[in-house]
Length: 159
Image (tube, rainbow, N blue to C red; front, side, top):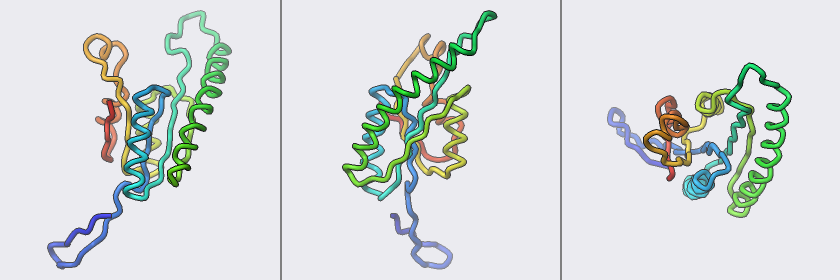
């Protein structure tokens, strides 16, 4: 909570910072580190944390593409993701922090993260970055960079 004095009226106003924190989670060490940092922020501001995982099927579709293989891949990803999210939820509850998790099937991870944050009124996004550079960044892109460019709320990028 921050106390701010309104210049016009001279009255103090209280602003609640970071009440709803979104943590996009991709099962990487960097996203786990981002989650732990989000827990620290949540402790300080008495915030709620939401974990969001966006699952993608086979992005390299070709003319003999079979959608059944995609469905099976998503099913396996969802199972593994749930196991990881349960561990993180337990960690948050041990620290008395309210946590929820969501798993989305996604065609555009960046857009889905941005739309999720906007629709649920998250006021901080804490996201892990793999720190790719050069050709890898060009080829694979950067979800953290895309989120930073498109979202309106503050973003904390954790490397």
